[in-house]
Figure 1 (cartoon, rainbow over the protein chains, first blue to last red):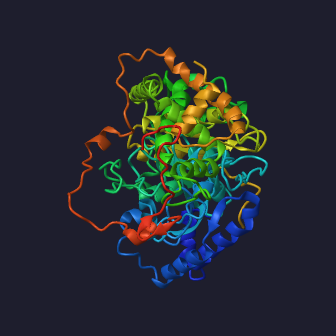
Figure 2 (cartoon, rainbow over the protein chains, first blue to last red; figure 1 turned 135 degrees about the vertical axis):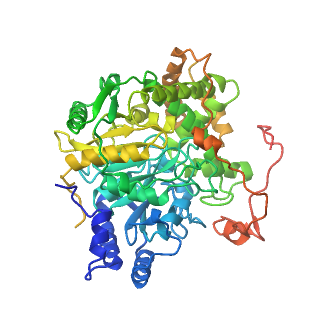
Figure 3 (tube, chains in turn cyan, orange; figure 1 turned 90 degrees about the vertical axis):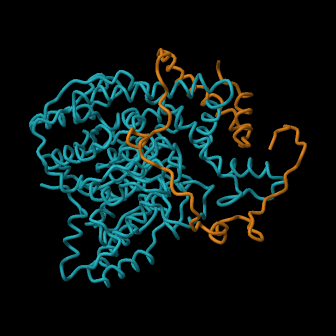
Length: 493
Length: 107
């Protein structure tokens, strides 16, 4: 049995048949994106004209890849993908889910977009997200929430909810999102698909709108682990336009997928599987641990004693960095500008007041506070020290295991409106994911079944820096043995 | 120390946010409760811990990030002004700065 739906692999083989081509594949994607959008609200922009034009160009090339395509781009030719609206695509919008960037069209492509385009991928649209990537449910978008294809009264997760819904509903086999505290892995878990965050510095942030610069990474959704690996292959690697990318060679992720996992050591921090975890989530994750044992992995106990502080650390560091990064939205050079301000300062204040939503304001305030004179040591410096302790915990754990396994999200998808009154309860959705971003290590969320109410559950694996091959291999092994064969009720034809 | 509405107003001014009274009443307790939550970090003795500054891995730290100091083409004025709310003569036009406002802030 396999994961149902048109994966990258399946589409590629479809396109090589005489009766099919990129135009046909992309047309289908566009048609389904448009058809499902009133229900799901995944897309903020669908580029029918541009996508079909690009598909025709690819078909006219007669199967000749562009000269700039390295082996890294292999397998992406003609593949329709969706891109989160905080990643710049020249000529398409980039609102970041905010009113303050309504109508903004970036004058350049992000590096990850250049690489996808060079590989022949076709970007069919920009997806909805929590405003400036701040949220865990996609309810903070100025353009309406996204609905979970498995149950449209529930959230898809966030902040990359639109991209998650686009892949889960099988409109596209893969999509780009971004993570600062788990914004791809968490929605992947809630939507029953694969979500992958690379090591910090593995993928360029040039053209990714900045939220928390020491945490942000472009991340990938796929229907399968293979899909996620193929897309990551295409976009990863040093970029001189992002000085935080590392000069580390990119291995061939796809070729290492089916390596043996016999004797692989999987670390489980038992203390984190206790209170606060939904019973269904716990049951499915325990079953996944058993499955790994059956596949020949060794399960070891590890401890991450400072993991419980990760939300506190995250909401100091990420908001501090955000307060700085979002200072640029002032109505001067792009985006929204308040009408008829008396003077410059009023323009700044009213533009930002009118353009930003509540969650963004909340986080800017928090970040400004923790960085302000007299409080910097107590909060920001303190948080950086605890971040160092969290990193150390992982280094210690990785001496005894190859990857750490936890639930991705403490609960399956919750209802729209359920957590919007209590910001802190929403923040706790990231309890398992944000430690990964704080440590800069890679993480992957893999579907591991459905809850008793039929909602997807995911577990996540985290490895040391540059351990992407290990993660893909371990995740692939599980998926081959236990693919999620159910499909959501809202799904592309 | 719990965060008051007066604190929120000061922070809002620093962040160039003109919040309404209604927002003030909602935001103040929310920000206060989040700050109370993060104060749990004080449970930990970090006196001997070096702070983790930024997000670079060791390999990232070792990567040479500086390039040759040579002029290269950049975005260009036309593209840079393409999205401007009020472009004028190759500049971003903005309302005038009023000197001597009651906040006496430095520009």
